[in-house]
Image 1 (cartoon, rainbow, N blue to C red):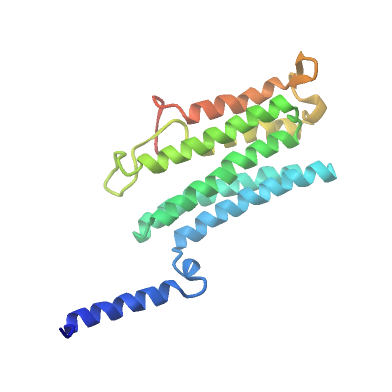
Image 2: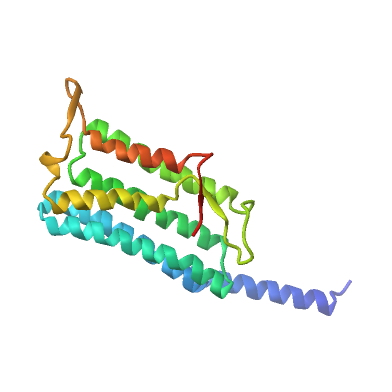
Length: 226
């Protein structure tokens, strides 16, 4: 039986859509402006990590200040991407995933690596810092899994966060920025380190990361979204 004109038109449209999707860099072409802003958040986080790592080699305090500076810029991009998406009414699932991955770098890995760079380098310190990063991962995964069901206002913005948002980790960075500016890091970190057993040392300050991570994964703590 010959195909109808309607079937032929549908087939051509489907073929055209497939051809469009298989073009080189088709994913990049499909990025919205909000997605580009989100990627800039990730760029800031990655640059902060590299600056902290560079300090471990150069011992140049300028690298620490660069690491600290990139993180607030990441927050600025994180603040604007959602607003631009709602303004242009073109948010997407890809954008949501990009946002979470960028946040993990800028507000999870970057603060943890910064803490390691300024002196919290023992094995036990690294366990606590890893716990902090894992809490960030869990927090972002829970948000992505539940955001569709969360109460929203007329603009599509959710009413509250479950647990503290991961960007609150910048409060830790602000505190340590104060310590660095007053030459209170590395061997002069407040509280120094304590030996729990032979070869098992821990900096008490690292528990700030543990507290921050625990608040992020809280189920009962609800923070109004500004």
